[in-house]
Structures are given as structure tokens and as C-alpha cells.
Amino acid sequence: MSVFASLVEQLADLLQPLFATASTAAAIVLFTMVVRLAVHPLSRAAARGQKARTRIAPQLAELRAKHAKNPERLKKAVMELHAKEKVSPFAGCLPSLLQAPAFFLMYHLFSGDRMAGHTLFAAPLGDHWADALAHGGVLGPAGQVYLVLFAIVAAVAAFNFRRTKRQLATQPLDAGTADTPGAGAIQKVMPLLSFATLITVAVVPLAAALYVVTSTTWTVVERAVLFREPRPAEVLATGA
Image 1 (tube, rainbow, N blue to C red):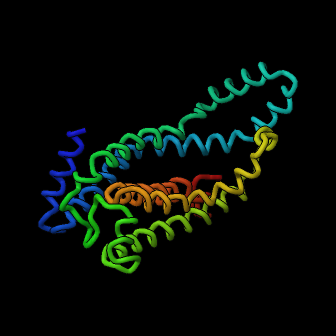
Image 2: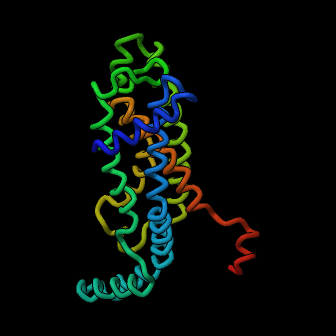
Image 3: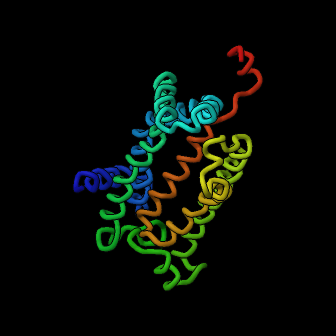
């Protein structure tokens, strides 16, 4: 863990001439972007996998209807289809799983006394939103830093909410998933999960909150690019 701490400290030293007292905060943002850039190839693979699963959804529905009374045969047929189409049902989990250790390291290494003396403008990186409220209130110097973070998260979440809701509307539940208890409710609630980051930012130390905000913003932009709908000219060019 000291390796990661040293990396961020070295980045902070390099950024100090540009960002002065906010150099550590800038280093955390840059560190987050490096982590996300390293995971990006897996994100691209996960996007390809999700597109492939969407493409084979009609075939999966046919298999479920065909082998509805034979679970073992259905399982084998689904595995064969996944192998034929080179689709992994777990590919989408890898980017999130690999990011989790980085977040917990950030939370452990850059909270409390470890961040003493390091600030983002008037907000100490080791403090929480509750500390900002206790020292100046919502509109106090530290409180204003959190207001900016909340505004960024809310804007990103609103964008992701509209995009996710639009995607779910154009990709209805397939025959097998529709029979799962609570599947419809989950589909309705899923777009709202974009706003859960607001709670995370409010309860973790500011250093970890910077990681969360940067990573969340990266995720939304990355998915918007990877899952963008092709323009008519692009569709004609590919012969689709």
C-alpha cells in the first residue's frame, strides 16, 4: 500500500508548481485517471460482450422456449451459444472488480491524519461533509467545495439516468429474465442508482470522494462513447 501512497505523493510534488496547496487533490484525480486508463481495455471488452449479449438475446429466448422443460439441456445449449458467439456472461464485472481495490486503498491511505495539512481549497482532504457542515455550514468555505462536487455528481447522474432509461426502454426484458421475480422492479430502479454516488461523496473522506467523483464521471463518459448509437452515415459505411 505504501507504493500507492508514494506514487500519489510523487505526483503531488510534480503538480505542486501548478496547483500549489491543491496539488495532492490534483494528484488523486490524476491517479484515478491512470487507474481507469489501465482498466479501459477491459471496459472495451465488457462493452463488446454486452453488445454481443444484446445481439444474441433473441436466440437465448428461443432456447428458453425450446428447452423450458429441460433445465440441463437449456444450460448446455446456452453455454454452447456463448462459446460459439465468444460471449462471456461475466466480462462486464471485471472492470468494477479491478477498480474496487484502488478505491479501498485510496480510502485507507488518504483519510484521517494521513491527509493532515492537505486541502482542496478550504476543505481538508481527510475531513467529511459533516466536518464541513460543522465548520461554516453548507455555504462555508469547505461546504462550498462539497457543493461543487455534489453539483458535478448530480449533473453526471442526471445524464446517466436519461441515457440508462432510454437504453432500457429500447431493450425490453427477454423471455427468460421477465419471468424472474422482481426483474421489472429492478429495471425501473436501475436508472436511479446513478444518484447513489451523492451519498458516497457525503459519507467518505474528501480524498476518497475525489476518487469516486472522478471515476464515476469517467465511467459515464466512457460508456457514452463505447455504447454510442452509430450515425446514419456510419451505418451506411458499414453496410448495415
